Length: 141
Image (tube, rainbow, N blue to C red; front, side, top):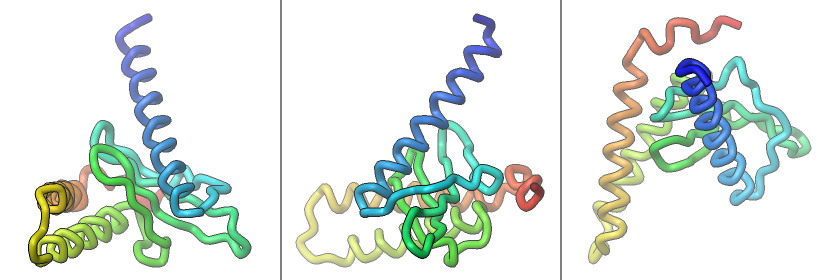
C-alpha cells in the first residue's frame, strides 16, 4: 500500500469514527439520524468534525453535531447557518458552560478539569472559525 493510500485510509477511518461518535451522541439524547447533509458538513482532522444531520423525527429537524478532539455536542440548525457559524456557536456555549462551572461553590476537581477543557476547546474553535483559508469553499455546492 502506498503512503498516499495509507493517509487516505487513515483519514477515512478518522471521519468514520467521528461520525460514529456523532450518531452515538444523538442516540444518547433520543435523536435518530435520518440523513447527513455531506456538502454542508465539514471535518478538519484530527481536530474537529461538524455534521449537518436531518433527524428521523416527525416533523424532521436538522441539527449540527460536533465531534473530534473535544466534547461531542449538538444544536438545532437554527442556531447557526453554516458549519463555520456552528463552530463559533459551540465555542461560545462552552465558554458560558465553563463559566457556570467555575462559579459553583465547592466544585470538585472533575468539574474544574472539565471547565478548563471547555475553555481550551472553545479557544481552539475560535481560532478555526477565524481562519478564512479553512472556509474558502463554504457555501459552494
